[in-house]
Length: 132
Ligand SMILES: [Cu+2]
Image (cartoon, rainbow, N blue to C red; front, side):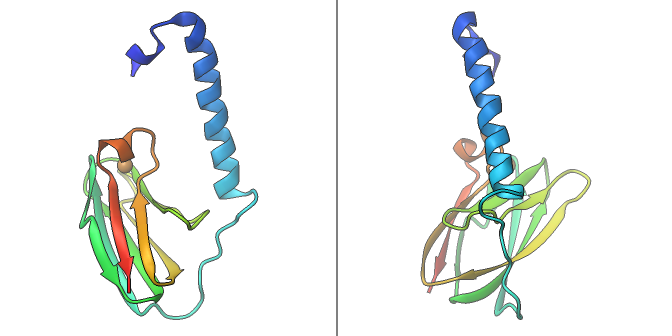
């Protein structure tokens, strides 16, 4: 991580940009433009996903279209789970709070889910949910 800021002049501005984008992203998912509204009603299927450093298990899932519950557990480390195309949805697990659940309503399609903690996705925390 430290090696990235080897050139000082760029490093300061780079760090400011990185911090800025995190703040911006935080606003977007927590309070800003697209607050996530969970579907009401019973889930037709529960998907259990386990997170660790640095993978999800399973990382390939299938489910029928409709309301799905996702149970995320952590066996090591702090992680979250977000789904591409589902702004605002996020499940977070940490060392002290190792289970998180949430409901989503998904149409047919192929969805990519990942951990959006910096560095985790590129380290392997990504998976695919196929809704049929
Ligand atoms: Cu992670």
